[in-house]
Structure formats: structure tokens, C-alpha cells
Length: 132
Image (cartoon, rainbow, N blue to C red; front, side):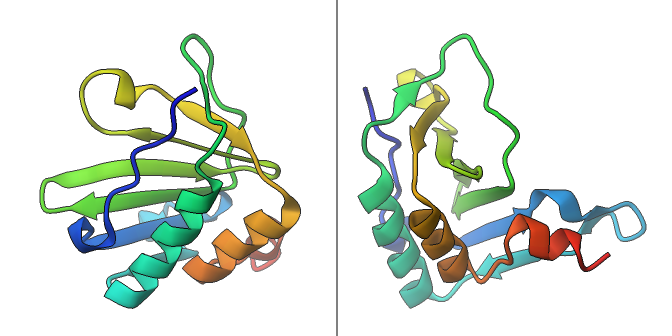
């Protein structure tokens, strides 16, 4: 088991996150999307994520279940890490060469999932879906 490599908060330029079911072709983007550039918010989120980044299982020959949320960590070179949140799981992949680029997955509780979404300022999947 190998965890995701979560970048240090001072290496992150911004975090982009969205709810998967809110893509709107009229605006060619997500209705429920947040961009975080505040260093304090970035640090709080990366610390919380680091605490959950344990017991990751590598998914070498399979794909993830469908995520409800996608989070991209951007540094000065582009996307460093992509994290997906599901109803009871957390997964991700570092955008680098080698083994760190392998998809990884771990289980999370309802409370942990809620904490991630609250730190990002994103609604839950059903909440976003009901806004249509």
C-alpha cells in the first residue's frame, strides 16, 4: 500500500473542485465549482486530506466507481494531484511518472466525506442535483 503524494500547501497555487453532476453544456463548465487560492484554506484542506491518506489500495487493472466530486491540485507546472470523492471512498492519482501515477483508493466515513466537502465549500451530490 502506498499513499498519494499530497503536495505541501506552499507548493499549491490553487485547488479546483467541482460536483460531477453539474456540468452544463450551455456554459461549457460546472455550475457547482470552486477555486481556492487562499493559502490558509489550502493548508487546512491538505492537512485534512493527509489525515485520510492512509490504507490506499492501488488499482492497477481496474477503474474507480463513479465519483461525486473531483478535486485538482494545481502547482506552477499544472495539475499535480487529482482526488476523487465517492459516497464512501476517496481516491486519487498523482500526475507524475512512475508508480505515483497509479490510481489509489481507500474507504472513508460519512463524517470524513462531509468534512472534505465542507472545507472545499462544495454541496453534496444530491444537493447540487436538486438545484436543476
